[in-house]
Image 1 (cartoon, rainbow, N blue to C red):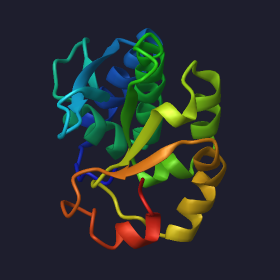
Image 2 (tube, rainbow, N blue to C red):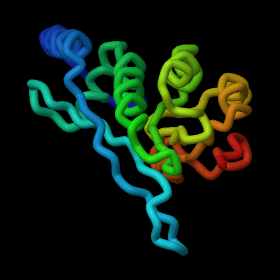
Image 3 (tube, rainbow, N blue to C red):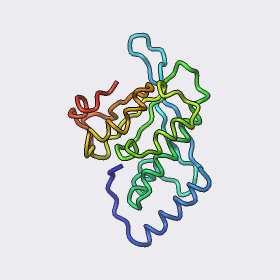
Length: 176
């Protein structure tokens, strides 16, 4: 996700061990933050927020930063995505679900597989492109998301104008 973290060899070993345990036990959960329509104040969607319920106790940002530092960032994103989509399948049909993903995760073929395996219709999913890493090639990103967007998946810009998220995303990615 582009978050910087320098780790010593011992830290890398410990991070890898923590991640292996996390992937084996899948000890994370999804909390849903309501998203309201400003005009009607009705809840129209939720944002999926990953919470880690395992040792060591760390913030989600730290888990993702450390996973990225040892080359497992995208793997952790997909574990969080699959957990979120599984939990969201039981939400009322009229609600959409916002999920945060890096540009690299959006380019990964596992994205289509994860969405198709879930019980969520793509029209109910909004991918919020994170601000933590740069979009290297907008055309490649749009091509990777094209079939999912044709199926109704929507794209949003998370924390616009923070980190690597810029106004350039708007004309290049056509969020909706």
